[in-house]
Image (cartoon, rainbow, N blue to C red; front, side):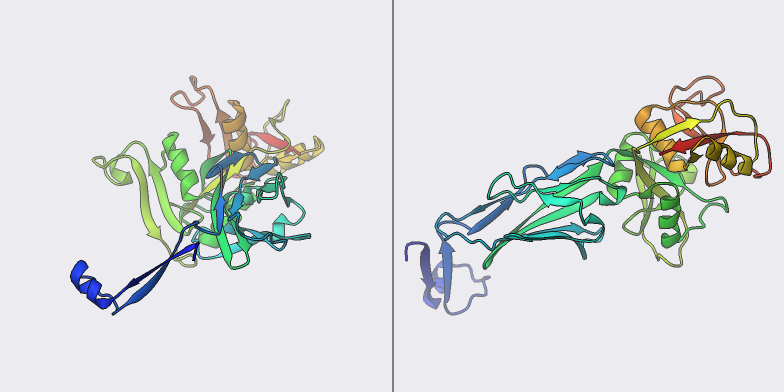
Length: 349
């Protein structure tokens, strides 16, 4: 038996050589492999960062025991882990010449195939929903192994509530609200990164895992107490149907042009919508303004209508009368749509 070492322990050996706290059977046979596992699955990077609309490669390779005979039916499967890690979404499966992609990944994924042991997955035309953790699984007969890779997108987290007021969104409403603003519900990791970059917001909002949290960089009484430490306040998991909060959304770069329509007279909301259409564009969404501000440094001190009926303006260079203390997207509320007080921000894809 070259590859296995057979160890047989008799009950007498246990009694003489092992502590009495071990509850062992009278004898046990243990097989120890001298050559290690028959299959090892690895990833070069645990985290990969890319952009919406771009392409990315999720690295994964495997190593077979050289004593094993070649197997033309090695199965490679990629799946996406959900936020609760209890469910998996099928992404891609390959076995020999047979390959299949699933759902929203159909036609956008393939194996890199840089070598016979390369299981790396290429994803093209990245979307916001592609963000998350992916599992690479290789099955070789009775042997199998896995590796996990995180896909991050360059983007920005922003708090959001609709025109009918704060704390009015259940989880499903929150998902729709973010989607309507060219965004998705942010994950905890995305909110954490935003907090580290200085995001401070005293209203609790949904995250993608169904928890409700909010980031505080400057502790104060209405936000957990002024004697507390900075951090992310956590309300825990909430009832997705009954409980209502705001939401934290995540958006990324876009393919198109975000701009303030000039010359732009003061107009009502309906006039603003028509003005963008006449210019071959659409009235911009909140997520598009945040992406332009955060990722492109867009700066404009003119308040303008956005698609949700809110009025905002992005300031990258703080100055007098234009967000003097901080770079931010300034929010002027949800005014009466019939008021002719504002210009408009447009988006042309």
